[in-house]
Length: 103
Image (cartoon, rainbow, N blue to C red):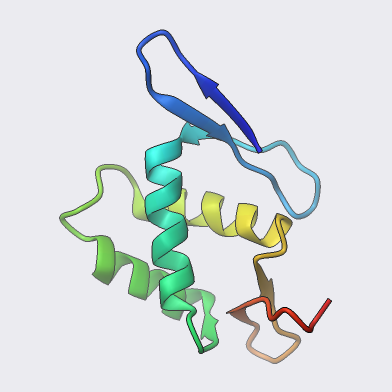
């Protein structure tokens, strides 16, 4: 995880991408907010992409400055790259927190 502090003291994090594409530099505070919301939404359940983003919009509406969909997608991809969440092989594909035993 790469964290940088700019002269205006906003901590940034460079996200990862599961396919090795270049990540995005985003505010660590926004990253942490979305990470917590995604993991909370997926706690003990599987959600489709649409369901996950519906949950994010519900939980973060009026409490997040920025495009929830854009930041959500960026952080979701980062969590996939870090193997914290995974896609299922079901149709439609769903997301779930990666279990300790499915390595």
